[in-house]
Length: 213
Image (cartoon, rainbow, N blue to C red; front, side):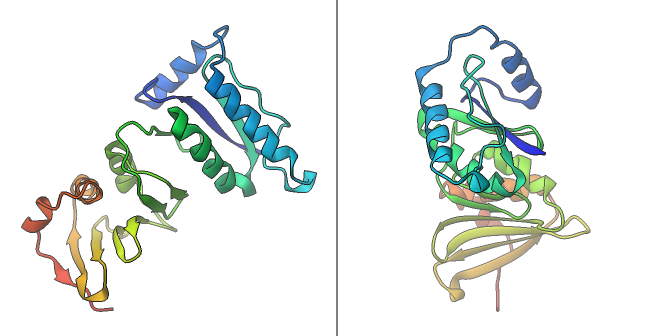
């Protein structure tokens, strides 16, 4: 059984239903050079590995149809393949679609930060759309999201079973680590997005408490 990722141009779709429409429209369309380059590099990297360590499930990937590329991988290679796709696709202006989770991860409007999603692994950027997609859906066994700019500089949230969130931010050291409890997922997502953009205006209105570890 394989796990699929699909590449499509940034901005080609705004919703998962639009992704399906876009993919159906690509039959018979020419393959862009950038997409052919991505497919060739994935195949080159996979061919360097012993067969037992291959990260492509169905042999070499083929770019297309049109401006789309489907990449199937074993489940134990999901993280590795996703990281490769971001590395290759983001600089070329391509979004990554995960049809299992119905996540469209589009680099348009991104802030380059290290994101750790408790249920899905690591990502190299955050967008406002992703913050508002991910925060309300956080669930066991990893109901947390961490957004990090540098060592000791991060914001994170944890969603409890009753639906409330602990939101924390750390500004360089243990004596600059603060926490607040919130009930509104959209508010938490907005605050995380604000922090990623360096805007703490809405932070000042909250009753932050210094966290003692």
